[in-house]
Amino acid sequence: MRRLLVLLAAFFVCAAASASAQTPDSGSLGPGTLERGYEDRTVRGPGTAHGAVIYSPGLVREGAAISATPYVVDDLQAAGWDAFRFAPPAAGDIIEVAAAALNGAAQELRQRGYKRVVLIGQSYGGWLSLAAASAPGTPVDAVVALAPAAFGARGEAAEWMANATALMPLAEAVNARRVLVFLFRGDDYDPGGRASALRDIFVRRGLAAAVIDEPHDLVGHSAGLTRAFARRFGPCLRDFVDRAEAGTLFVCPDPGWAAMGDFGVPPDLASAAAAADAVPGLAPMAGRWYGVYETGREVLFIPNKLDQDRAEAVYAFGPIIRGVDARSKLAGAGYTQRHGVFDAGTGILRFAEPEADTIIECRLLADDVLAFAIARKSGGEPLRAMLRRVE
View (cartoon, rainbow, N blue to C red):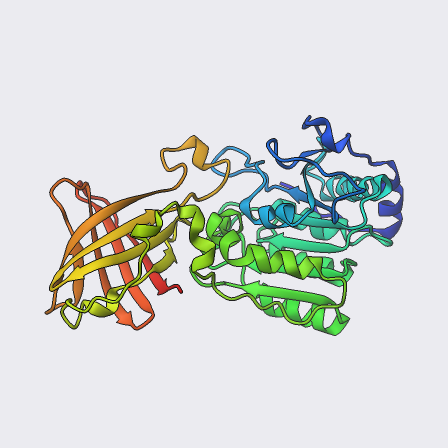
């Protein structure tokens, strides 16, 4: 079990001075090193880039580490930031050693000429990012911690409550100019009560910091790695860390239709025209609807041809987590066209074509909320989502 030792300023000053990162564009991932965040994207260099982002992954997921740079970093990279990934040293089970190495990597990027350095981390990587930015004179401008944890999950680790108690000293010590902490519903690594305690600390310290607690539709410890999280928070996160002046509250609206282009639905199928010939209960379902299953997979549903009690619709889905999708049959995005029938008595629009292997049912709950479920005809638990109308 990992040990959390007291973060001593003298330790950090000495350790950070001795820690170093490999050449960021070397493409080699080794202990305590940086590698390029993307193999297929150019590293602009310190003279051109707005700054550098270091992403630190969590340790494991289902027995295999996820080292791929998550979707949420994409908006920063596209806006002119260079992205790198951090691999903690072999002694990374001692948090101070790994945090000092990450601090040293940030210092080396500064020495290379990057004007700003942002740390983004998930789970253990989020914890390391906060710890690395707690050193006196830290070179870190901003920290984004996604479900920070370092002491195991509920029911698996006797020390898991330290994911709350030991997090507060980090909040007291973090020296970055901006701090974002995301906490998610259904996170087995979260003992609860962390959001209000963190907010109290940040307010008392006068930090430009925000805690986003249990954002809707994003569930589980790895929710911050999903494409759904990036679609909703990526642009706002980019703007928050990119501002030079002290920030106000972190406010992020739900994504609109302009953000849905990567689903690949052809424009002629994405029409959201009104349905004059549809029966009264069916007509309000016309439009474009978006939501997220608890698995993290995105749903885009477009009933686009409604006639009496019949409907044609596009059912589209997106990827979940970069680096995990590639290991499964759930990789990538896609769409299919469906044909359904509306039951005026129940208010349910049902798609159960003989040639389809799934059944879709949806029901309007409010003008802008659609209850949605899909299940395999062969059995198993259905997937459910609350879809919201997108304009």
